[in-house]
Length: 381
Image 1 (spheres, rainbow, N blue to C red):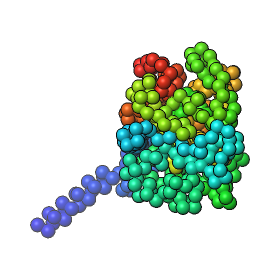
Image 2: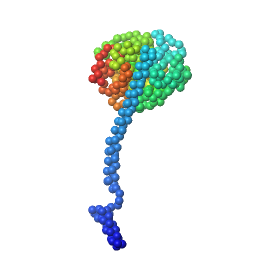
Image 3: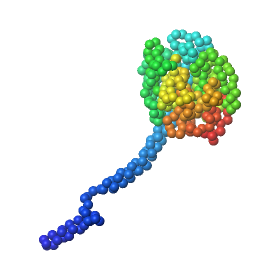
Image 4: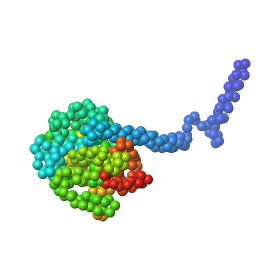
């Protein structure tokens, strides 16, 4: 028995050695060759390359869902605000004047006639958007830059932030025309950020337009016919959208229909800073990157955007500009999104739509005005 076992072991050893011998007669060590290792690494790389886009697409789908829900919450809050006050909140609240005279306490900008208290549409929606704690901390009877409001106006509110926006969520310091920090009564102002803005319509009325100046308004977006009007501090003489300085828009004012009119949309902080708080006189919004058509714009663009065409806003060829979501003018006064392929808007009825980068320009302009009487061809969206 002992001899038989030893013989069997010897035979097994010879078979094992034979299997580990290469075709050239040399014994091969156990393990992978370099070629085998490289092949395995290449296969893993291909699998990872196939998997990562799917993971990123799933994450972006979740972010889009969150952004859509944020805008839906803002739209619902606006509906509830209207139910409570029989109107929508103002684009921002400014001391009303048709002469440019105002008390020193409201810090009126002599160029734009923007003045305190400055509270914007986002601040008006706070009690209707489950942000009562921040709302209760604010003194709305004082200008938003009052020391009593310092803590509240820098609050970060999640429903005002799009998870796809890549430019940051943190509060920001308000800037002056040259890009330095604006000061009122020797103090800088830090405002809570938002990635959502309200629509002023096709036309814009800020900068010099907000004062006693005359303005050019397009009366026909298809033929570029215009008229000249005297503004005398009343932005409502120019604005054809639901939100502007001291606006008091009601459902019955939206003659084009709330389901056909854009109320809110996206503006990523990748392009410029926006706030839910309101407008500070003398402030300017500065783009974070340069393009041939963009540049700093007046304080109203802290909360508002417009679609174009707007009187005096022409491209390098002399034609009026219409700028839908992600249009390459990249104005600080237009809607911009970090979602691939387009961005979300909230209509006056509270519904949310995704508008592609390839939307027809005239359809975009038609959706942005509330009382111009245009007929929207939804198949061009």
